[in-house]
Image 1: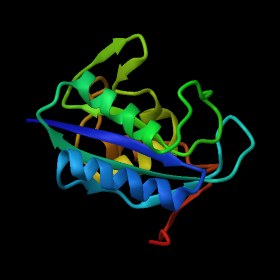
Image 2: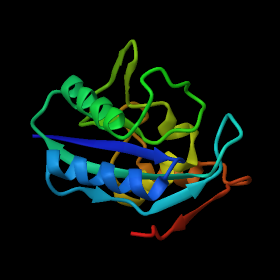
Image 3: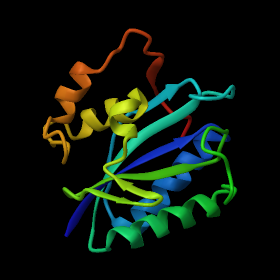
Image 4: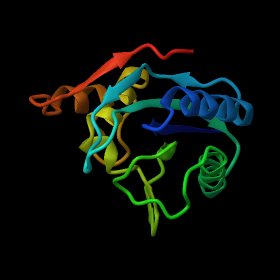
Length: 162
């Protein structure tokens, strides 16, 4: 059995698409460990605020099967196949960790660099997996969050409409 973590984000019909993704992921993997939902400004472009969260799950699937499944859930929720990296989106699902796997295979990178770069990934990950260690740095996610520069942090926990 593998343990993975998925970063979920949306800034178009956020409540609808976040809930739909959680339902689809739960149908696929069973019970999920969910962080709080964080609202943050768009990064890298002008756009509506995002909802972001991290979910943990267990699976017997291989890593590439999981990423294929995530792409399909995105497409099922109106994601454009050729959407730009920094743009508004109905749903963004990124597999950020899969066991202790370290992989950089073209478009598939695990652990994702976003973990240490963006508060909207690191804070919710530290919330649900504080003692888990980054497979490269071997620092816990709570330690990484403690060290993170929060000087211009613009995100907060929200309660979704559902």
